[in-house]
Amino acid sequence: MPAFWKKKQFWGSIIAVVLLAYCVKDISAAQVRVMYQSVNLYFLIPSIVLSFGMIIFKAIRWRIIIEKTKKIKLFRIISLFSAGQVINISMPALTGQVGRLLLFAKKESLSKTYVFSTIVIEILFDAITMLLFIIFLSTATFAFPPEYRSISIVLAVATASLIVFLYLVLHYEKQIGAIGRKILRGRWPGVYITLKRFSRSFTKGIGLLRSTQYFFRTFMFSIASWVAHVFLIYFLFNSFGFNLPIIAAVVIMVVNTIALMVPITPGNAGTFELVVVAALLA
Image 1 (cartoon, rainbow, N blue to C red):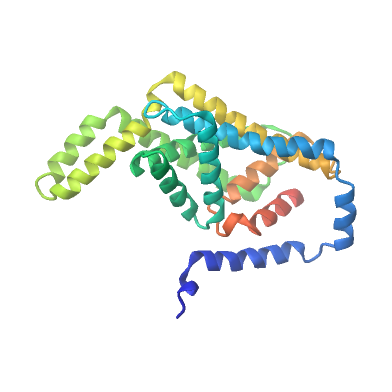
Image 2: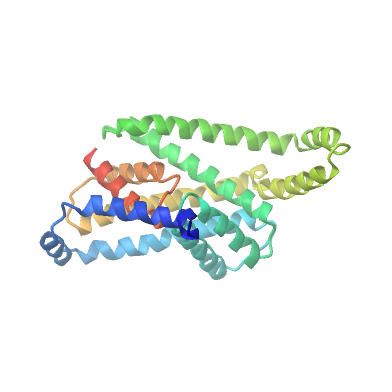
């Protein structure tokens, strides 16, 4: 059997083509041409600016996360983070996160475990911010699609579990180390040494959670990146003539993020379009 049949990228691309075909099957080329000619550039330009703003805010957030370990210039962190985002969305089924991890570790001479811990912190802050948006939607008059409510509960439970896990790791680091030493050191010394090194790098990466100042600085840039995302969608609505309220942009952002937490196609091609259409019809 040819090797490409076994590659996730191949099957991800096939799924992307099928989903794209499904999304565009009823679209008229003439209508697309008319809509393209009627695009309002006054709203499209700020959408483009905000798309860059999202990346910049997230890059600065990662800079804050690692600044106790290594200080990186702003322009370099933005270019490095942008490259990491391209890798992340270009590969399906979370393999992009692995590529992003390897890129950061290689370019900045950081341990892979440390970079992994910073990505965990990013996910934690994104999840907390997303839950705030979901709570906002649940109290608003705009109906949140019911099919995504159960997923939002799972997200809340997973986020709470992650917070508890990180709290235990930070506050009981010595006790956990003592238990590991007692169980593993004599029987499997190689495993013990490996886990000890992993633990040191990991706790170093999540150490910013001990500092209230670092926590709120990181949280503020998380909020800024997601708010930029909301207004990006809102301006896109207006640029294409859709007279929808800002809360509709929040719904699109939340539903799209929840549905694409585990990407199955390169660049989320096809799946992104399907989710957006489903959210607009909800």
